[in-house]
Length: 394
Image (cartoon, rainbow, N blue to C red; front, side, top):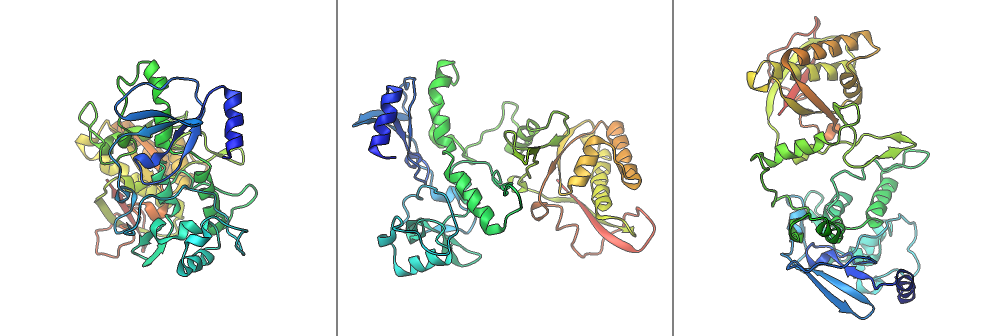
């Protein structure tokens, strides 16, 4: 923002802006100006000082290292300080005119910039601003999912980004997702800016520690001594639609072409183990019917255990057909409706309350055990010799 624009907005609002940057705590730069109409309370975790033309708010807390936001095996360079501000991405066939940071990059970094379609400013491809991918053995700017973690957004929140009239390719979809992150604000800074309003309302009792925002390692047990995994399941229960029994979206009314879109849950948020894996003899069954039988098998497994009777639980499925039918407890297909009614009978008999959520097949923890070629005892569901796998994870 230019100095003239900042001065004009300050004259209209009648107050000086407040400058906040998440780099005080988190390993990413994203300075932003806020024009607020409330006073900032005093606290040990915030340093409020007046500068020429603006007020500066410094977040005083323990700095979060970059390793907290990197997948296992990934690393940054030795000269790393902070990741640069996320900017809009656009794939180009030729470089733009006078891009920022062109004179600060080496020839190898400029070659990598050209290989990536000039989609970001050149300084994003400096070695000090990139991460090392141990799988591809190469350096690159942080990918989309990593940038979302840096700005404390939910995993997979921008995965539903599509074009207005057609489904775009992988490159165009990546540009849209990175542009959505660039046009947003850091969630930690937004939470800090809401502190004065909540303080006036009497909540919280004291100013929070900024380093605790978005921290997975600092999650405490609930008031009932529940584990973080169970608290996460309870959080997803709050994202059910108005009918109940199905998690439609993670946060906010996400829509595409004026229709509600269901977001997929990232199953990597939990630790999984295989509790049931078997084969059955089937012939001529549709894939949707097979997915429904796997879900029915999981309900039967729960109904056989006394400690699981009368419980509400979150169950992940990668078939939206099975998810919709089992949520509504009906189907137009006669063969499919037979499985749905058996599921309803099990739920009534064992007082089970399943809450279904969609998961992508590549992230479904029960997908791989159902494909492993091992000698297992068959679960006879129909006569025939065509065998398909089924598994249930907990």
